[in-house]
Image (cartoon, rainbow, N blue to C red):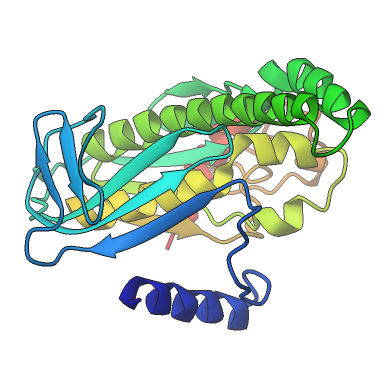
Length: 286
């Protein structure tokens, strides 16, 4: 009951901030089912490959990592693909990483996910594009079958499994990249992108959603706060691609996305569009 009340309060907070729709009762037909229970009198415990849960006692599970700290709560969740997961929340002391003097600016893009001022270029994995044809095939099969039938349920589960592969691959890529950036740099400068507004561009909306820039910003922000790093944000409307980071000249002709390289008419410096933007983000970040 305590967890349910806390979830309702969180839902209303998000609703008043216009982040989601009004809260509603949990549906038994929803593909994702979950419940949360708090730790009380040792009702949650882990011993080797067994997990102790209230009213279930000991059940076998695949332990992904060693338990650290004091257990606070556990959430059991079944996803749309029919797999069950148990998330254990523990209270641990996070120690800041050793200080260093390295600063970096990052420009996020679609062709290359991240271009950094230190020369790092991270390719965009495009997970949705990789599974797009397979996903469309099974979505067509599901649409042609009788809703609620056994064959429709099989196709629905197949669609859910493909979506799960896309989400897992995307999160794995983002976690590895953000963790590496946090470990190697003391100050990280990124652009404050308004992804919700950018998704209104119907020509690029699918690619922007596949890149998941908002999730990248969320991960790097919370990891920086936990490990003693600093994240700086450049203004959304700052002309980072059009400004020469050497002399500060603003070239209005670079607004066109097809211009990948340009020469500054003031100082004759040759710029790669993304590298120049990364240097400007580092300089303009507050």
